[in-house]
Amino acid sequence: MDEGFEVIVRPGGERMVVVPEATFERLRDAAEMAEDVLAYDEAKRRLAAGEEEFV
Image (cartoon, rainbow, N blue to C red; front, side, top):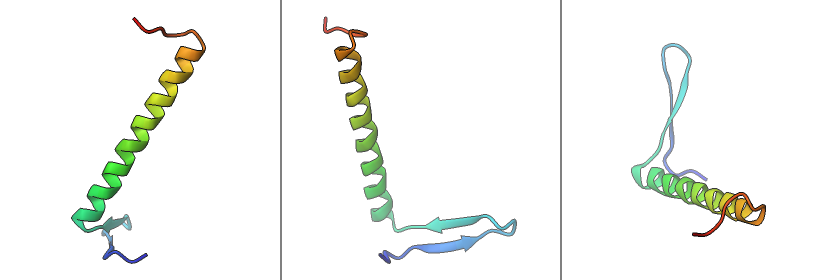
């Protein structure tokens, strides 16, 4: 999967990857969606366990 990534090695040896902006935005959107799903799942778990309730 080569989407135009570029690896840069900084003088201290740290490796960094530059990605196209569109790829970055897709990755960011996917990460945000995953966080939302985790929060939803946790809320469902807390409701089922009686730790939270609908008001």
